[in-house]
Length: 392
Image (cartoon, rainbow, N blue to C red; front, side, top):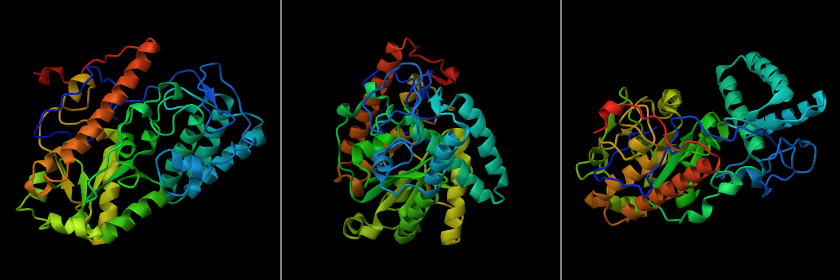
């Protein structure tokens, strides 16, 4: 969803990338699946749907271990827990079991019909728009968690038989910076999401998942920003209505922020916090608006400091079409930021180029895993390109 551009050209090590990024729909198996008895089962059978009772041990709740295994260090969100409990109760009340499948691993069958009626009624009964928003987000996440049990690897979010974790090489991010992955609930646990690569490579201390609409996550993020101060918070979002600065303008010797890198290394409160908006372009405006509202509430100003990376097309465009020529996936945007910072004398000694390369290698591993999966399933590995007239 972010503007990807750097002053050097990126050449990926694989020629096919129809599935990286997040501006298109997730491609998941069309065959329905149901909950397996263990949330950490190693089986990934493609057999017909199997029904599991939510009241069996381990199936009726989301444990802290299970929740944090998906890439977060937060407690289990209260509303997510509440919705999971309501789904369990509903199974017992209507004597029907949950089944998941199709794009996004959605609820299916008779249970889906009944649950849809119930959740719509609950949503309408919520008078407060903020409560409606939080309910929507929590329900999306609860269903994705339950539908992914025993099916997706908790680390890479791919089906267990396609796990790519062995191909990733961890790397330490420069401690003077931190990424915040502000993710839409519909992108949570998506197989072709690339933002997940950042914490897989750098770890959850350097890259924090913040789910859009989850109160506990957003509160944690903004409490950190409050301590850091507005001058140390930046959003990568190339919106035409937003006031943006280039990396050179923001962090060069003549930086308007007027900070010194030596201070960044000695004062923990001076860590640079970068927000990466991780969701489809159609959802990004709402996500950015919410960030601006929070910024105004905290600092009295709606303008959130934004960075746009150097213009130019990435190789990703020929491999996976994007809504426009200047947009690409989350991980590639992080690569671009690290690479541009590396070119500045103030940052050149922190090995940011090596850190960018580690993420780029992760993209290649994800690409290879997704490509192999589609080939094995007899699916096309190419997609009709958009904006073909703009390609040189």
